[in-house]
Amino acid sequence: MEHSHVTATKRTSKNELQFRLSQVRLLTLDVDGVMTDGWLYYTEKGEELKRFNVKDGLGIQLLMKSGIKVAIVSNGTSSSVQHRAKKLGISHCLLGIEDKLTAIKKLCDNFNLSLEQVAHVGDDLVDLSALEAVGCPMTVADAIEENKRQAIYITQALGGHGAVREICDLIRASNAESSNVENDSDQIGNSVLA
Picture 1 (cartoon, rainbow, N blue to C red):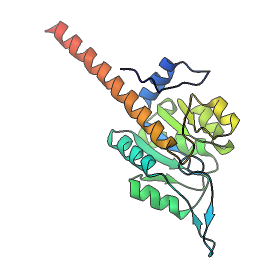
Picture 2 (cartoon, one colour; picture 1 turned 135 degrees about the vertical axis):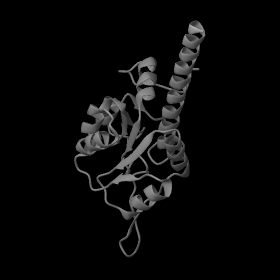
Picture 3 (cartoon, rainbow, N blue to C red; picture 1 turned 45 degrees about the vertical axis):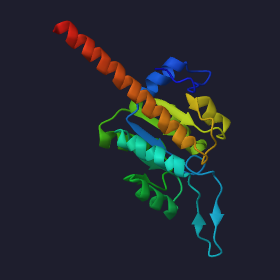
């Protein structure tokens, strides 16, 4: 079963994209501009507010339920991100991270994964080194050009407007297709042996 909505970038074929998506075991997400629209809102008391997309949240929860780990890796330090992570059940919420690649490598060590098994979604320069290193670099439609050039997938949706849901659904679908192919191969192999 092939998804017609999966569009690879110019530097990656559709088959290569689907293969890389099927290898993902950890999704790491930037916040500002990816999980949010990138705008910052302040109360009269100077408290920072962020707007999150409910569909993105459900996509994250469905992805985690399918066995894929999700972590937030953000340069920001807003407490609203910690609240959102807790509400979604994301136990790895790394804030104030300037070197995202090092943080992602530590997560890989913790989960016994390779960088090839990581999808990272980032929209700005602070994400570039991570995008260059992971197996599945992805970005949002309104990301900077450097990130778009590095990504193997650019969402149709803007950051904070369903882009994370789009990515979560792609990863889940590719992993399900990969499992179905493996199960079909096992059944064929077992029937030959029988």
